[in-house]
Amino acid sequence: MFRGEPRSLPIWLVDADDVSRVEPLAPALTARMHLNNLQSAPEILEIGCLLVLWGLPVDLVNAILDTAGAVLECREESDATLYGRAPLNLECLRLDVPAMDCDGLEILRPVAVILETVSRDQGWASDAPELNNSYVGCHSWIEYHVQNVLGHDLVRTSCANFRACEHYHRHLTYVTAHDVLSLVAPGTSIALRLRAQYGGWSNHIQYARISVVASVALREDVDARAVLAAVTLNRPPFTVDAPASSACVLM
Image 1 (cartoon, rainbow, N blue to C red):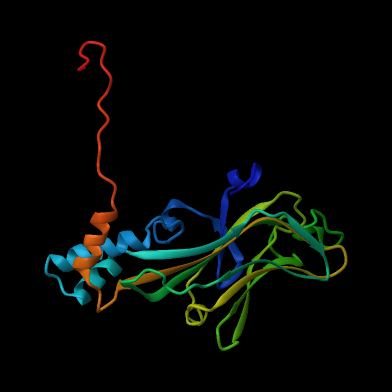
Image 2: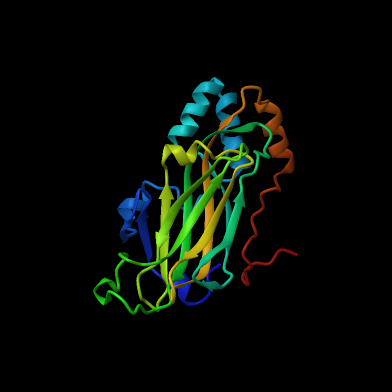
């Protein structure tokens, strides 16, 4: 998904409430985040239905799934290289939040919005050289827009570019604010936009990602027995390939 240099870049975590606060993404922080979610809806559904067949009520099963961190992620990403000069307000990526497409599961609540970009400014600045190589006084930044089905549009800054630096930086913003998540539902759109203002400033991007992570639950009317029967029917048979042996070959 990354090409060459961007894939190897370290990730800088941006404080979603104060984008001037940026720090390396450390393992201690990632342990509390849903950054790359490998679970699939059929896997969660199968686990939940197994618990139901063991005699647990659906409410208790859902509490177990929630505690265990059963989440699904919808994601849009792009490795297109885009750039523009001030005045700049250019959309570079959009995610339209889909409805749940797995019978038997429902979305419980959104957990996080994840915004990741690899970007830079023009690499120089003619004023205030003491601010260079910092996030202060950079007039090149990335915004995100959250628009729900009622047309309510919330605009926030995802990250600022590292001022007057010709090298790309990889920023990640992990959004859990209630006023943002309360807008996230099927039909909501989330967009990333490149911004720049004042003469000489520009914005360059090589990668963008928008993810919505949501906690999911079994529906009250799920037919656990039918779900597991379908899983068994569609699962390929398990086979073991015997290693070839020159000492004993059965004809």
